Length: 241
Image: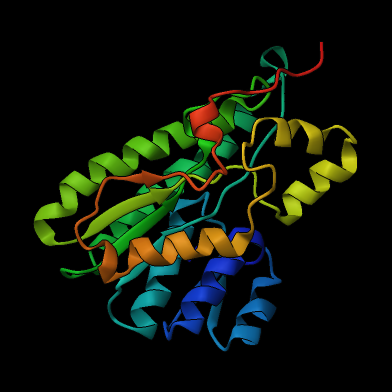
């Protein structure tokens, strides 16, 4: 489980642990160790933007289990910038964490998996819906959707399933920070959410658990969007001029 120190990742790790899974929580934030201790699980501080760190993560998997049943590629970041202000370094950082890390982790995990194993990627509604100041984030999540498709096809003959979750507006620490910084942010988010509320991290964890379970045994290459109806509305509030 990458990106497991807070938010959606922490909730997924907690849900999997509650269901009896042995979980290795990975995150660049050192607080992941305290989260893992609270859950009675293992932790590794790792920077998934670097392939050498992905290799180190899976060396820890080998040392702990010698194999793997489930991988959750959850680590992700955003970077807000207008088109004219976007830099190559900022773009590369977002893409490395949001997409490249999932590719290399999927490759490493599949080499350790047998039939019946599952990979779950964390996408976003922004894989299909655009926000003009989130260019690298939207592009990376769109790429992650196609990564889910192509790796699902590649791994299907080996009995390994690959699916993704594409959340809408979820109440995480990141979302709370956005709301605190902008009095209008909540109203904008709700104007594009037909159900009229933020989703919870526990709701996203439930979808991830389903996709990793045998109950989703005939699903692969799919992205499920728990978004309160936003994809159907197909509406993005424009940024102020």
